[in-house]
Every structure is written in C-alpha cells, then in structure tokens.
Image (tube, rainbow, N blue to C red; front, side, top):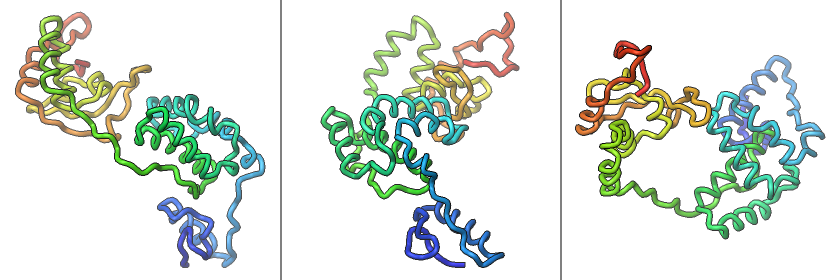
Length: 255
C-alpha cells in the first residue's frame, strides 16, 4: 500500500493533511481484501447546489457538537454579521479567490485588524472543508503582522484596586486574579476554594457567561498558576461563601 494524499496517484483527491492521511490509510485497508480501488464518494448534487447560507443553518450545530457554547455563539455571530451578507447567496463551487480577496479588502477598509479578518475567514474555510470533506484550494489567510497585545498598565491596575477595595473585597480578588494570575472572566467565575492550594491556583473550569454551565478553561487544558503574595493575602481575607445558611469550608463552593 502506497501513495500520498494530494499528490498524483491513488489518493490525489484527498487533502494533503493529517485528516487526508488517515482517510488514505482507511481506504487502503478496505481495498486490501479485494484488491479493487474504492471510488471516492463525491458530494451529492443537492449538497453542491446549496448556498453558504443554507449550509450555515446546520453547520454550527453539527460541526464538533461538543464544542463550547461560547465557540458556537462566536461562529454564529461571524456567519450572521460578516460572512453571510457577502458569501451567503454563493455556492461553495462559485466562491473564487477574487471573492475571498474582495471580502478581506472590505474588512480591512473598515478598519478590521488582520487577525480579526483571518479569524472570520477561518470560519468560512472550516465550513467548506466540513461540507466537502476536502481542504479548499482557496487561500483563506492574510499575510501581515498580528497586532501587538498590550497588557493593562500596572498603574491602572493600582487605581482600580484603590477604587474598589473598600467597596467589596471580592472585587480586589477578581482584579488580582485577572491582572496577576492571568485568569479569564469565565475562569474566575468558575474558580472554587478547592482549586487553591499552597500558593497556587489550578484552573480546571470556566463558567459560560450566558448559560453558567461548566466548560473547559483556556485551550481546553487544566493549568496551574502561582499566586502573588498580595493575591494570597487577599484570598485569605475573603471568607468562603456560606452554604445552607452557615459557613462550611469542607464543601466545594464558588468564590
């Protein structure tokens, strides 16, 4: 059994990717008992003639069903607000590189950053690849430097702490968790007392901002972050939330 996905030969119809390699291996294993090549299945005529708008109706729900609710919301937002107004009436076969380039130019003219445009194009690229089971030959990525990420000025953090520390000690802890431990909003909301041990916090979950359901943290990975001395002190001053009308630190409780 031999051949390379995307290269002239038995697997030239497959994308030159890890997914294509697995598909080629699967096809070769199934061909081995009979020695007869398996004819790749092409998308049906109905699928080919569907517009991007029609594909979008089911794409978000069927593509990686286990995705975070926030990821699905973002894909829906990008499709509805940006991609469908431009590509919605086109079929996949009708989209040409000039169309992708024109969309990108319009977005840049509107003041969008290169990274933002690339993120929106990535949604379109994923939809096409998902529907056709093949990587598109179109280019869905702009060249250019990604804008530098600017951290919040330490002086601004101190001003925020001074303004809020007296009002509610919880605000101080939230600000420090974000500024000094690097936790995101959902991760802070999902933090529990059992996640804090020995001057470190283990980020295991986040809370979705709309549904409050537990979701995976950043990059879908648990991570451990060291706490600054003043964050440790602030956490020590913050009493656990009462459980059932009384304080009970044996139970896992939200901060």
